[in-house]
Length: 121
Image 1 (cartoon, one colour):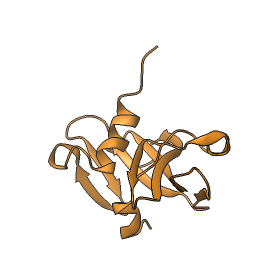
Image 2 (tube, rainbow, N blue to C red):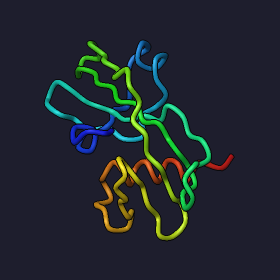
Image 3 (cartoon, rainbow, N blue to C red):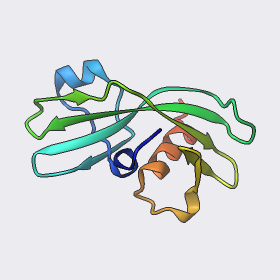
Image 4 (cartoon, rainbow, N blue to C red):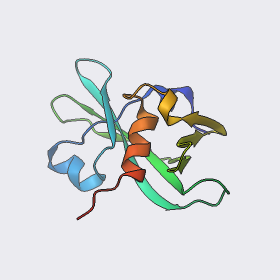
């Protein structure tokens, strides 16, 4: 179950050579203090098992100090489900969040944008 910490945590853009080799790029980041940034990244995305959703995702959490040291990566993964079509929804811990009703800077909106608006090459 994703805790309140994960719901309020933000993701960092993992900087430095060590971080870049350990984790995929963050889809969301936030500075928790002058010295610490936390980031969320997709560990994997698959077709949804639950009807009405497009994707099941596993979210990883990592943190780094402003100098790029002391990287911590949460060893567990946090599940969520995403519906790309209207009504656009992200479901976390059994609760559905309608994307259009969330603050655009909310991590669930960033997750939806990342999963549903993949770049086209």
